[in-house]
View (cartoon, rainbow, N blue to C red):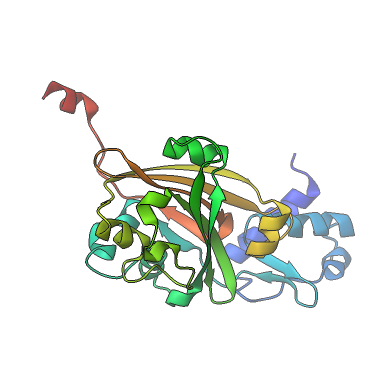
Length: 262
């Protein structure tokens, strides 16, 4: 049998999903549910914390526990990197996600800092460099309105990006088409990528930066970007607020046996 707090959390979650509690609406105060016989103060508190961890509500002093306002952003998979978006237009990856989600955006929703740093072990391994070799780190924080959605830090070999817009810390994408267009213009056309995803609880620093409640989860992304000759031109680490995204992939199903027979 599920614990009392879990039963209450499930009951409230169902009312949220059915629309009984609308986006932006405050849930009952803990004392009101206690008086209504839904459980002890600790039971109701645990149920509310579970709803918060599941991304259904937010809690803050002065505002209580409130149903989240918006559906998650669509985080595109393959389609967000379509060359026609950034090579021929100006739809960089985070903007492609907003367009697909039907959400507004400003180029200034992305802020960034650029620095030349010793390569951490994971970055050095991706680029085939000795640990500690200097690389450029381009760290971005992306927001929707006032709410951060994710961070993304891209690491580049200096010889690939020195003197380009990629190392310009001006807020927003690195000019028209963003970083991929800069690499393209420098002779490093991206050809294929590898993305690895892992879910974990946010660190205290990440929770503060992304405005997460204690115990909320994030999705950590590792992206390695290659040219056609397998040169790594970018290794990126992203940290996404798990409840603020729905990851969407649309791709052709491979048939390796058919390819091997050709």
